[in-house]
Length: 266
Image 1 (cartoon, rainbow, N blue to C red):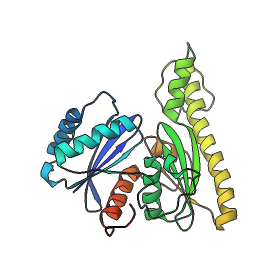
Image 2: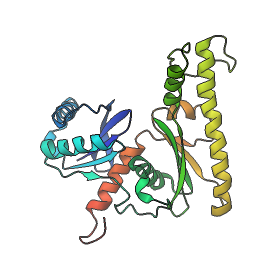
Image 3: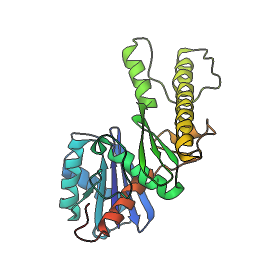
Image 4: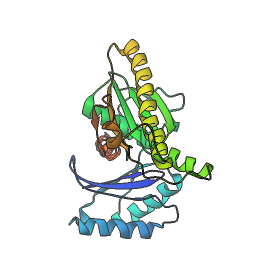
């Protein structure tokens, strides 16, 4: 089995794959203060509760956008699973060309989204990840990574608004019944969430127009990340939600690299 790990700025997600099937997954808060022993103990507890023997984990793949945690989780993999973890980056053989001026600056989560999104839906494709930041990754018909867009995340916007405005409270993020708020909380919910929908749809339409010129057809739009299901219910532009997209990408890349002939660039 493979232990796939998605380390984000806000949350870390663990997933265990038996072959291509995700059989268990867990989400925790990303904390810089954790040691490899704390992480290892936590993962082993998760595995025990899921009835998965620790010794059945034969490989570990890590997608991380938090360098300090990458080191901690790498040490955990070696100590608790005797595994040399595969760290996802553009230096690996991902199976597509990256049309970024600096390919190494593309986040591992975005690479995983691109790989698994294209494997499931083909191209052209727009992958929207509603996380700490809202990212848009764009793939061509042939699967090349064309680039994308990075915007503030929904929760990030809400927290920053509360932090910067003395009289604006923390709020729960769900859509109010009306766009016209009749109190501060519903007014903030309307502005943040309906504003996020309109921003997302506007950006998608702009990307679609450019893609259609170069690719001759519209791109499929899929979503992932913590707010993907919430947003998809409000927009017909999103074809599907795949919460495990990053983990799926870790698994696909791990399989690709582990099966590559020796001497091939990885």
